[in-house]
Image (cartoon, rainbow, N blue to C red; front, side):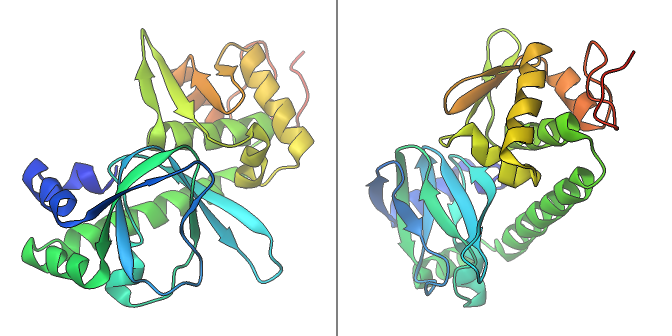
Length: 234
């Protein structure tokens, strides 16, 4: 679910037509945490990573976003500083619209409710993810994060797989799952050994979506691995 999916083709095109098109190289910053909300960016191609920093400077990857997203919209509508940093995980193309123009666009198309509902749903989704992670074994935690990313940015691959572009090292999934790097990589290895995932350098393919979702609910991996106590089944 993204902004583009919540509006008509004409309303989305109106946003694109009113902005200034820009391209962003991989790893470049589109929006920075703490900055004044002077614009929004409609993402038309590529993949971005949303990262939040705490007072100690620790960074937490919150989510990945793909084409069809509007970035920075809540800061503009609420008049608040950016709450997170958005960087290009892959080369991106977007359309930049000044804050005042976006507010006028939202008012003209009566999108206030749509924008706020989308924001609330994202917050609820993130809270459900964090709640689930607290009660899952290692393989289940990683499966839950991968399932979440597949729902957000996965693209269908023939015949049944889902390609998930990460645009970042797999080790960064550890921070999303609240796991140590070694534990996260081991869990990913278990998921690959079970045939559920195929791991690439900065991407992965979900070969069995149904099985991934079962493991993400706390069920054992095929072959008995992934028990809640972290040991193989006998």
